[in-house]
Length: 363
Image 1 (cartoon, rainbow, N blue to C red):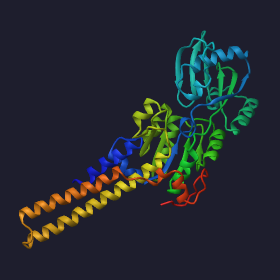
Image 2 (cartoon, rainbow, N blue to C red; image 1 turned 30 degrees about the vertical axis):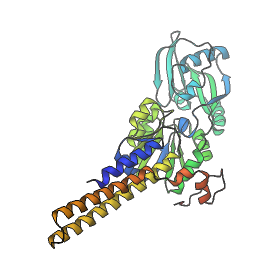
Image 3 (tube, helix red, strand yellow; image 1 turned 45 degrees about the horizontal axis):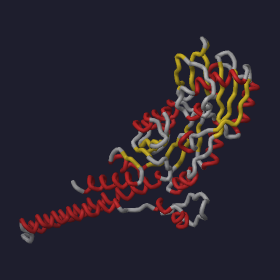
Image 4 (spheres, rainbow, N blue to C red; image 1 turned 90 degrees about the vertical axis):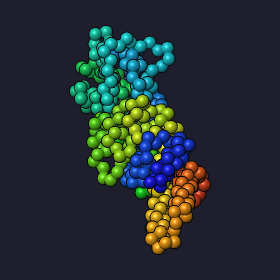
């Protein structure tokens, strides 16, 4: 009875010391069984700080388009929309604002309903033309995220943004591959951008144009136990559908952190490796304790039946075994994973500093 809870509490404390908030023992134990981990793109694999690279007014004066786009973007909490907001820039007053999950935002300005969203949104509204399609494809193949302003009749302006890959993302993904874990990217961005970022990071498979319900469906379709790493409101359904949901604790939305089972408080993806190894170690210690307890109980019962064990000696032996089980469990508090070695870990794997890990098992 003591073997499991003491080990789990020690494991949860060790994870917390390393900036990983695990919301229960179940998630700690199941971490070792994950066969696939899916990632959101913006704010998870990338910094979530996109920078505007291209702006093209199409059916409206550039200054007027900026005013409308800024008015809509300023009401959104998505990092892609927020990238359009410049301090002090004039913005339109928006009424009836609403977010379109996985697509963009919409609101009424001076009596006209305007939408600011991605490629998927303008296709759904029926305002995408063949010439615009070619232009968008060229930008998307370059790994850029496109936003388009429309009044529902025509596309008024085009904005293209680029987001830098988060430092350590590639190494973290390579480390997961080394543990035999498949990786998947699920993003609301277009397929071309998704594949471009996936190549940079080393993700096995990338799915673009994913609405929140599409992400959840993709999670359920994967074989084996699946983890999901995300930071935004749009990731909520997928985080809930995954066997273990991981939220980016520093940059993540309240919805993502509340829905997830584990929060990475420092937004460090290498903590996924640490949690996997911690889970392996915790389960191993639980098994050690249970076997030790069973062997000890069997010995005590046999010795008592043969008359070699009295009440006092039996009590002392039982308490001693409980102390040993507890001491074995709290070793987790000082246990260090190979993931903590950084360059030392790379050296142990035969990898030059700064070069991503391969797929061989470092353990």
